[in-house]
Length: 164
Ligand code: HEM
Ligand code: HEM
Image 1 (cartoon, helix red, strand yellow):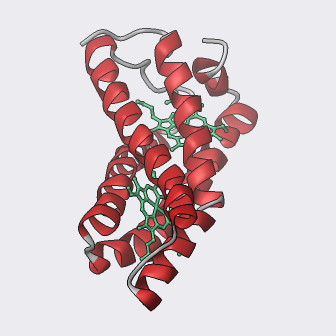
Image 2 (cartoon, protein in one colour; image 1 turned 45 degrees about the vertical axis):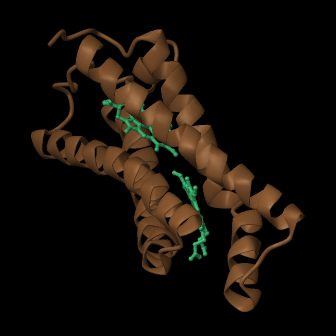
């Protein structure tokens, strides 16, 4: 595998596009929640409710497609090595966090689709209660880690994912 000095332009665009869509679905799941409440209470939903829920569903499925694309690019193009200025233990933690983030970005849409299209309530509970909280926690750690890099270890890590 290659060892580039920064993430490629497509990798950077995909990172920020994915981040934007993930925040959208995390912060505004209202249409899907209303559809879910209606289905549980009455067994049906109005066309408007389905329309709003579909926005959450399609954004989530787009995230899944983008993540698969990212993993393919990662495999083909490689990623820059972690900075030697950063303590080894934190480099290991960052690696594990990235693997978990990728895992959650796949597990969220898969459990969501199982609940929405196949009616598996258990998958919906995992999606809405466990995975959602885990994703928020990882994103918080991820952002905190990136800022620590940038301003404490001064490794200029943000540049690798922005200007390149
Ligand atoms: C929903 C929000 C986000 C998700 C799901 C996410 C996910 C990821 C993942 C999976 C990677 C690993 C890339 C790889 O090695 O293939 C990564 C890298 C990175 N992310 Fe995020 N990210 C998010 C938001 C942010 C934000 C808000 C920042 C800015 C503080 C940020 C800064 C970075 C940086 C600097 C890297 C490169 C790390 C390195 O060079 O090793 N991310 N992100
Ligand atoms: C990374 C992508 C996704 C994220 C971040 C996300 C996020 C969320 C959030 C924050 C909630 C509200 C949880 C709550 O507080 O009650 C939710 C609920 C839900 N989402 Fe997603 N979602 C994603 C993808 C999907 C997809 C692709 C589908 C279906 C095609 C879907 C279907 C659902 C359903 C059915 C619920 C209601 C579950 C329940 O409460 O039992 N989600 N999602």
